[in-house]
Length: 172
Image 1 (cartoon, one colour):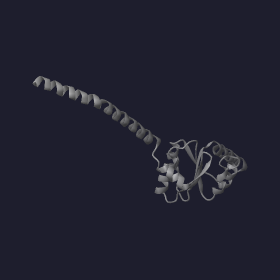
Image 2 (cartoon, one colour):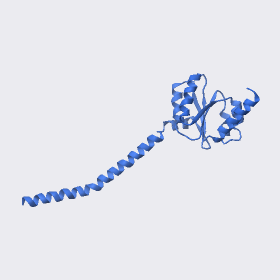
Image 3 (cartoon, rainbow, N blue to C red):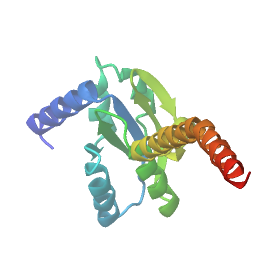
Image 4 (cartoon, one colour):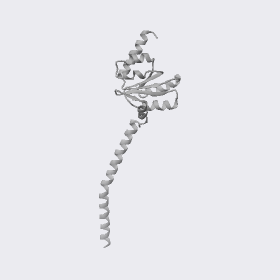
C-alpha cells in the first residue's frame, strides 16, 4: 500500500472513530471471506459498518479522538464495528461468535466509556426496543382494561340489587 492510500485509510478511519458513539472490537482470526461478508450484511441492516484494517493505521487514526483509550486493545487480527447508535449490534456479534469459534468479542467503546466483553454480552441479552415497546404497551392496555372493569363493578352490583328488588316487589 503506498503512502497516499494509507493516508486515505487513516483519514477515513479517523472520521469513523470521531463520529461513532459505539465501537466494538472483535478478533476475527481464520474467518473466510464469505463469513465476514455475511456478518457485514447483518450489521449493515443496523446502520453499522465492520472494518478490518491494519492495527498500525488504526492506532494512528484513533489518536486525538474520544476513542483513543482503545488504542492499547488494537492487537492481533482486529475487526472494528462502527455505529452512531446502539441497536442490535451486540446481539448480532454475540450470535455470530457462538456459531464461529474463530470469532470473538474483545471489548468496545460506548458513549465516551470503555466497555468490556461482558457488558457487550449483557447488552446482547437485553430484549430489542420493539419487544420493550410491545411489553410496555400491553402493560398499559392491561392496566386500562383492569381499571375499566373495577369502575364498572359497583354499577353492575347496583344494577343487580335493583333488579332483584324489582323481582321481589312483583312477587309480593
